[in-house]
Image (cartoon, rainbow, N blue to C red; front, side, top):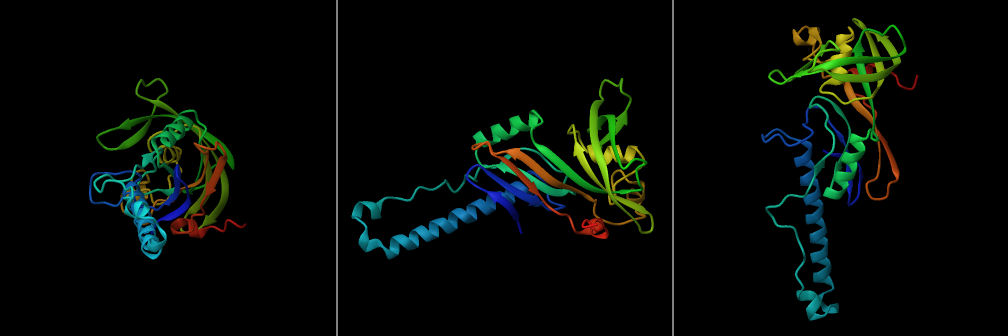
Length: 259
């Protein structure tokens, strides 16, 4: 079931659940683009049904010309346009914005390139940082064959600068010390949050790619990473828009945000 946070003629803002791909993958696995296209087509079908009902009810009140005028519709073979602006890893949940027109997609993509789209993440990490507020600056290299990223030396030609800031929200003690952190990205690199925290000895809970305990099968759980806040300017009105979600499942349920 889609959780639509906002929708108009230009954009649609949605909460992506964990386990669903951000864009079409060409397989039979569910993805957000296909789900949104089905959502829009269902709305169009419902609107068309209401229009037909109104025409049937009020047929005697309409002129023959208006009654016989065909209803404009999209070709059945052409799905609605959905522009992918940014992405979240499949196991990651959170707020995403998609464009419903190419003009809106161009505007949002330009904002993304200029760093004008704000993103804040919540994550549960294993351990506790020395500082309650801090930043990580590393250089990452993506390994295409393994779909992983690794931290490399600053002088590595393949390395790209990756920077983020974090703030400790709360720490709890279960079988080990776990910390809820609020993260703001300064750059957008492949698996950046997951790689940097793991590289600094604070891997994310549930990360079966970069957390040794989950890779080896010692632990079980869904990766505790959520794109909790998203802000941008509306592509048509230029009004600043802010959206947020509150992750409450998995490891996030162990923390009391009200405290």
